[in-house]
Image (tube, rainbow, N blue to C red):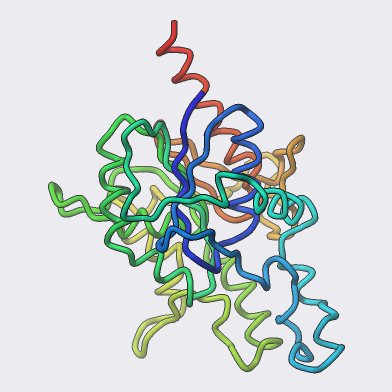
Length: 292
């Protein structure tokens, strides 16, 4: 089976995208190696774990412990269970640092996401990780990116070409429709932190959505049409585009995953089971070829 390197920020990563991917891969016999900036175990965005902090009463004693909006946006029970299980795993408790991360002996690199700016900007803007991603795309290594992890790939510029590693690739990522819906909801209920759901808000003079994940990723592509989203005629289109339905280990209908050979991408936590399963199958196929 394969070895998968999973770089994550020290804090504020999405619990589902990391933990469900970890569970799918390890249950299928793959080895997962975590890497954080500090080399210490990371911590997910607590709001996405508990749901607390997204309601107008969140700062009030007692009432703050009763989430409403947060129940809609946080990790579901499957994601929370996987996160609790992952926290006790040996690989999560003993990560390497980003600086120590190497692709030697690695079969795949998985780039998860998250949106909270305080932790995710450190991850997405890391020159160490961007160089690692460039190296991964130059090797016979599978790269899998989901949500804001695709943005890390988009910002990874190959010095040999001057283009993003995603230039000429087909990809998806967190869509502006999904990002905008969550942002509009939370900017009203979490009024003291109105851009909680926007990692990179627009600057003066920039049009609405210019700094969204979809827009920035699309600008890095050879052709904006290489950014893929659920289109007319797609089976189970409403399930995939609602932003409410999430896939499970046995139901991939709500998921939308783009397979571009040795590069796999997905949009949000609701795609994670299918996203990780596609990566697992690729690693199993590679291993079969190498051992046959």
